[in-house]
Amino acid sequence: MVFWKERIGKLIEVIGELRFEKSIPIDTYRMNHTDGRYKDVSEMDTSSWDELRDNKIWGGHREYFYFETVFTVPSECEGKTLMYTLRTGHEGEWDALNPQFLVYVNGKKRMGMDVNHRELILTENAKAGESFHIILQAYTGDNNFSILLDSDVKIFYPQVEKYYYDIKVPYDVARLKNAEDDAYIEIITALNESLNLVDMREPFSKEFFDSIEKADKYLDENFYKKYCGNSKHTVYCTGHTHIDLAWLWTLDTTKDKTVRSFSTVLELMRRYPEYKFMHSQPQEYIYVKENAPEIYEEIKERVKEGRWQPEGGMFVEADCNISSGEALVRQFMYGIDFFKKEFDKPSEMLWLPDVFGYSAALPQIMKLSNIKYFMTTKISWSEFNKMPCDTFYWEGIDGSRILTHFIPARDYNAVAKEGSAENEHFTTYNGMLNPSQVMGSWQRYSQKHINDEVLMSYGWGDGGGGPTFDMLENERRLSKGIPGAPATKQCLPTEFFHVLEDKVKDNKYLPMWSGELYLEYHRGTYTSMARNKRFNRKSEFAYQNMEFLAEVANRLFGTAYPKKELDEGWTTILRNQFHDILPGSSIKEVYDESKL
Image (cartoon, rainbow, N blue to C red):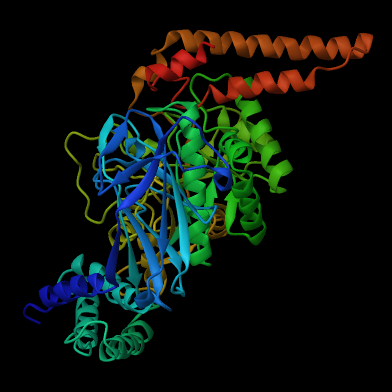
């Protein structure tokens, strides 16, 4: 086996490149610098727009542009699958503050593009002479004054991509194992024998494609069917994109981030029928309903299919330290009511992956709201102490108990990262669905003696677009139960909790945590932006008093109860209790707006 691993790695790299042929650059776009958003692109007059040629630089600070181009299929692409690709020169940088796009093709919103999502299939059966009218709604992000618009259309071979991932995913597992492990030997031997069948003398020839098919068939019969499927452990995988309602951007920017990210999810669902996704926060669904109603209607269809779950318990993922008990009750009331009215879905779970600590009053409020489960990861960010358990009953101040699970996603054999929030027990709600984090999730889980399953939420957050093609291709192979790795299973989070509840409900070793879940981090959020904290409390008292007096007036004098006005006021209060607004961890512009 000397150098087999190195040889296999190089061949996988070459096959990855051979997924594409004939790059046709797009050299010219028309460009319009405008603040106008959510336009009907079918009515756009682009004749007076400026020309942007040869990847000319554009950019700005939180500015909006529209770009237009038309791609006409050349004769040599007849019958081929064509992929549009887009690069900005900011690849590898943080997606939340970098350039982001909403892509329209022939007048229809297709998906968001960003540094994580750079490819879009235009057609799976190109017709010579067919034209694709492409419009990009572009947002520069923060202080990005030098952005490329580097794009092309490539011939894409799905059969080569299938083989690429069929060999790459087990190879990535093997790289994490010791060379003496049986799993390593089984994987490397099968991959080497399969790759020996590939004819690379003339790429894209009939002989090449025939050999790819033969090699993939060998791998299926002699590896996937022979060695896979025996894993005793399962990582339940939920597609997710955590979008902070405001943080290093304003509420207005979040409206766009949500539309772009939801568009990307829907595009991936068209390509991957097994893909399941969840998103919390009714406020963000409201933004999509108002600004992209066609996207909202498609979300409703995916909800009916059981592939998209609107869930999470609260109206927004609220701060739970400063908000009053009455306000927390209304977070549940308004959140649960929205999901029931809009999607006819009950709420079973409180989903707060990123909130800065959790009041001991929550289990009682959850119980009275018919919420059965609680999920977070944030406690793993604590500065000094690791929580002793990941799965437990959380007991509140009145004795109410809620089944709780902390997502344990992290890299395999991970170590603390100097200069970051990551410590030796850190986990993430922005999981990367790849062998390292799937294996790392099970490795990190602290209660293997009571349970064989853990939950992973995977996907880029904060406008990064959520899951990617790569993650979903990885999951297809990992779901087969590759030796040495847990099997994966696409799920909605409540599906996981139903399995978990059945597994642990009578287990005498299931622990209980009584009282507050305190986060040893972000301590300044108790005192920063005191003005907002003061007005939040005054608003809570004012609306509680108004409710009481309005009810008294209704009962004694028949005065109409001002439900609409009260709902509007509470909605503003609840929105401003988001966990990066009320605690004071957002940028100045957010607090300038909150004074209005």
